[in-house]
Length: 27
Image (cartoon, rainbow, N blue to C red; front, side, top):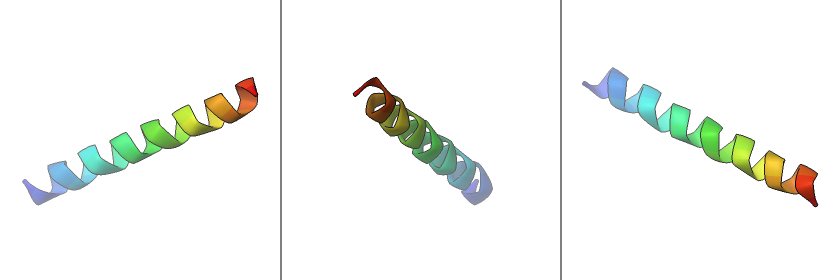
């Protein structure tokens, strides 16, 4: 259970990071 939660959080973090970089590139 903890492992799945950790993977999910890391996945969301990577998603947010990719979104941030994408917005920066669009500037």
